[in-house]
Image 1 (cartoon, one colour):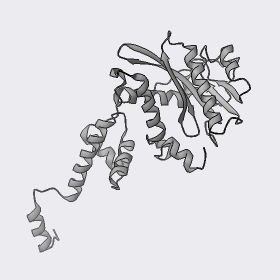
Image 2 (cartoon, helix red, strand yellow):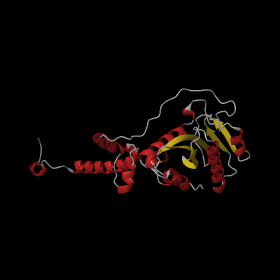
Image 3 (cartoon, helix red, strand yellow):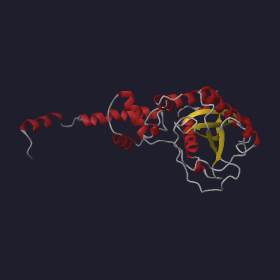
Image 4 (cartoon, one colour):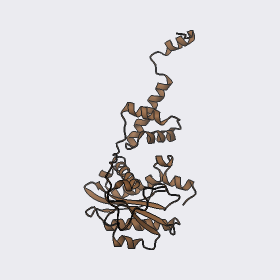
Length: 272
């Protein structure tokens, strides 16, 4: 077999023991299990990045994928469903047309609303994301009123306008893209941002693929709130939301930002 005498006896001496590759994979498996318990919604790429940052260990995403597969570890996040296309809004046409790349903050902001449940309570959560770095730039949560709370939407819009002004983007022309919800198309909503350099844009009716950033982000956010932050059982859902938004903007690594946080991505480019 062309094996040297010394090599043969080294093999005899370690036979039945794990080699360093097997030991490393076992160690990685333990790290993956621990990180998955903390963030059950993370996929293998996100788990790998978190472990690399935590340990300084260099290994490939593919190795992490094989370890996860061997341990039967998978993200428990929901998978999006493809919907059919609807009609264009006559009041506010789709100005974005799925061109989401922005050159700076507040060029394109997307918004959507979802309902959350916590200890028998229903809350409407309205969120605004900046497509430049997917940062949550405004949000508001209020007691659900048939899933259609106008004060909730208007409060989040006022927070968005205040955030633009505070960060020095009050004069920036912003496209605000939403679905064709009743409140987004209301006179009160239009008046609330009149003269504030906001231009409304709307998805086609019943076509969530026209607003993919908001739809996908809200899906991930709900999964993480329920499964990683215990939102369903908390006594103070508003405080949990406050903590989560800070985590999302300042601590949560984003794959499409090169595993940087939204705030880190923005500040590294010298933007407020």
